Length: 422
Image (cartoon, rainbow, N blue to C red; front, side, top):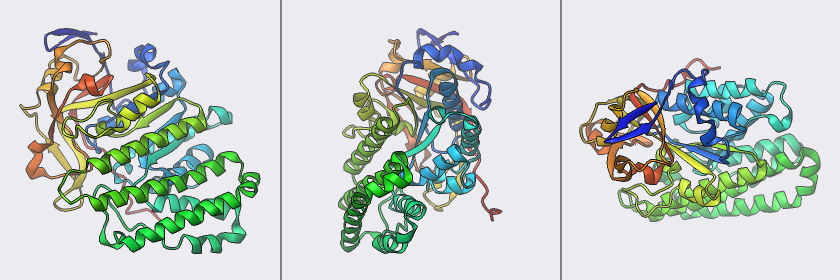
């Protein structure tokens, strides 16, 4: 439909975010996405129901109408292999698999529903038509270590004890990865041990490669072995954290983490040779630098170069509403609500367009609103209510995104209740 945004006429596509099984509102987008190799889809908070449901809906649409087959998410690679086993083979149970991802952000009913949809979609499909689920983050030692142990238990049970002793010091005690490492794992001696374990793992998998290929097949072997590279990324990231003083600029660690995430997605693409959907925060999928982190090359910027114009990124903007987040004061999960804020001129202008929620393709627009600095809410892994105005951040949307989804009023994602799990 044609609407006025700022002083320009624009074509927008009204969407129904929470109607995740009705894809009719997205059919008109086929020409935009059908020839892309990778779609990066962001979010303006890590805890909004409409963002999660809209992304799940977009993935379903891309699968059923544009030939996408690989789902990737900002979560620990090794841990997500359990989710992948669940959607491919029904192995284990969905809640245990989700917990292995190690991110509270995705421990929600919305993500669970998408995983269950992927599992059902795969019923009866040929192996080359099945959907797969991968993480691409590198902030944990536990995820890779657990995945490697699972592989050895399955395909080399006679040497489990020896392998376990070889990685015995590889223990990650960190619950919240958005902050510098705790003192228990921040000693130089500890990192020396981890480097030794990585050398042990490299020698182990090199020496047993022929036997493992014979017993597990090439795909499972490569999926397991990739965890060694993830461990190398994780330890280097932690070492960078140690050099950065608390409260000071974290450009080096941010840049390194984003470069690793992009490299991991590229590796997944090389392994699968299939179109990829990538789920992360706005601040990672963007094709241009965040204006408050001008010197950081973001994941989407790397992907844009890697995929030579076949990467399309979608950001989210919202006007007001609720979300769940880790409370920096109480250090617990809380539900927060943000008001319509006058400073957020970009969100205000989008709210006047007409539809309450819509998608707009920015690639052909010369609208001044999208080419100049505007403000909108931007919340990452933590939030402090008393400083809520600080979460209004500057952005130039056309520099950062190819498409934009606007949500007028948001609601909180629904956290999974694990109190009654057995």
